[in-house]
Length: 287
Image (cartoon, rainbow, N blue to C red):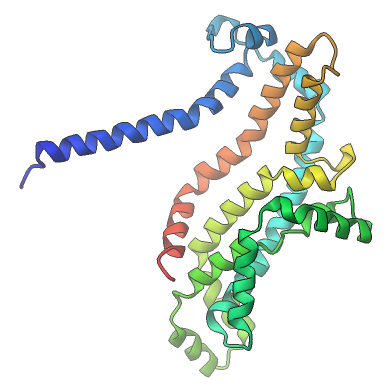
């Protein structure tokens, strides 16, 4: 067996070195946040990069539970993630199926229009969406948080790419056997595209869970605030000095709340990372 040459070994070593540096730089802010959430508030301000295991404490987490309605934030975020995610996972595959396997007038123009919406900056859509929500009387409601963007253009494009890989002969054989289009979609298409669906599910969860811009515009009361908006409001109160002289401890509470908020995303990524990578590979190979 031929051994790799010195140049090949140095190249591999260089790649591993760059990947290690990128991983450290990417994880450093997250690790700093988690460690700092266990430090007294005064230490976070006076020596933010120090680490003394003897001074680690859970005080920030206990104070956070007493002062921040984080349970309400989690509840509101869970409602939005589940309902908006369900709509995305139902309608995006259906639309992708239509664009991938049906022939109808204006198909190319309609699909081009869907792709065009991907190019529009989010900020361009904020004012029109807010005016629509105001006309409907949906400002500061869950409808305003769930329905806009529920049928995501990226999800439609992603599902079309995945479904294009399904042979037309397989679908035609089902039609010859008497299956209607809904049964073909549910019994044949959905099982085949499960890796792509899993990847879309992970990406949709992360996107909705971390969404901040639209929730902060659409909601004006604390009862409907999502977790990200709640944390942002707390940080704004700290910066503006509205929390009094004990602001150092509030920084610790904010880091504790941010650490707790990051846990669901980390769990979802760790559990489903294999499906995410498999789905991304499946969806990127068909044009």
